[in-house]
Amino acid sequence: MFGAAKILLRLGAVISGSDMKQFAGAGELVENGATIHIPHDRANLRDDISLVVRSAAVPDTNPEIVAAREKSIPVICYAELLGEITRSRLAVSVSGTHGKSTTSSLTTYLFHRAGLDPSFIFGADCRQLGGSSGVGGGEHFIVESCEYGRSFLHMRPHSAAILNIEADHLDYYRDLDDIVSAFGTFASRVSIDGLLVVNHDDLLAKQAARQAACRVETFGLGPGADWRATSLRSSRSGTVFKLLRHGQEIMNCSLRLAGVHNVCNALAATALAYEGGASFDDIEKALATFDGISRRMTVCGTRRGVTIVDDFAHHPTEIRMTLSAVRSRFSPRKTWVVFQPHQASRTRQLMDDFSRAFADADVVLVPDIFSVRDTDEDRLSVASSRLVDRIRETGIDSRYFSSLDAVCEHLDSHIAEGDVVVTMGAGDVWKVANGLVERVS
Image (cartoon, rainbow, N blue to C red; front, top):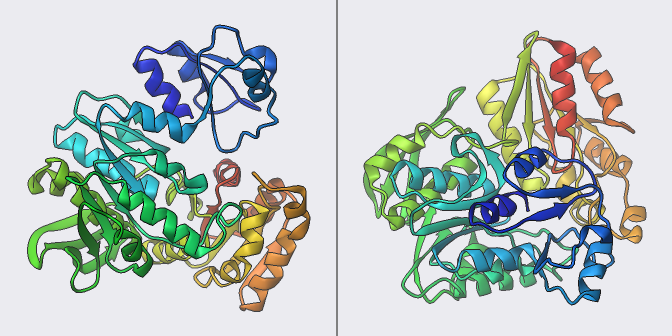
């Protein structure tokens, strides 16, 4: 919503908005002409407002939504807004269970470095692009497209990517087949003269891509991928690999990002950028200088020989991939993970997968679940202490803490030189990383 507000302000709209509490970036919006209210209140809704846009986290019972409907002011969701504001451009939509923000921002960066000047919006801050959204003079609009609530079906992309498909958002989707079906519908919405880039190594992604009427190209590590990475080597400074297209070596790539998953993200971004008009020379140079986005293996500080890393991972697969990349990049004496579960429903439904996701950790510290969109029944159905028990059953030292402050206290008295601390989750677990940096400095 922050990114969308910035774009609308740049396009000349009169914007006001509200949130439950103060948030990062509110000052920037105000400086650019927005009016911000804290908290939600029906009094915030002036009679001259022509449109109300809400995120998926805002329920029908929200006082401003109720007031809007009483005043017959149209109410749409964030995804519908994106569909509207991208309609005048060539939309490039990045979808998938994992990696959307990184791939969207990297794709934007490749377009930008090639002089294509795209507009863009995605769900994380990218310092090199000036934030999470922007309005450019080029013909492309690059969008992170989320599957929750089938919101990505509001897009009519000219080109798109399906990075991967796994079970997630089971508070909305019936089952995995229902998720694949939604991605299939997304694939069918890509312009017939456009391109769909799909993960060659993901059977479900390829299954969904069968519904596409456009040209389909694949990316991955396995033989047969149209865009393929080989000869991967990892180091503390990142990852290098050779990029092949249709079996022919195109370039030697250097990434500052760690992990095989980021190599795959780079392949998808490269395919989209090349389709959009970027040259291989521009792409190769840009890949080597991309620093990544916030909360994706972000090194918050290194103090007293302890490296403190923050990451957005909140799904079992993301946890496994990130911890593997951490071990490869830092070779830690001991890996401490602070994992804050995100949503009680997800924790309960994926409990088995979560319990097995921490094989590359030495100690896992688990605070209470960060609950969003959960019903009262969901909240009562599972607790962090249950996840701690299940992680212990796999042989990993795991402990429950009732507060983030208690986690900080424990870490501060136990970590030692050569250790790495990784905070993980989509909630406010980043406060532990920030607090720890201050404590050990």
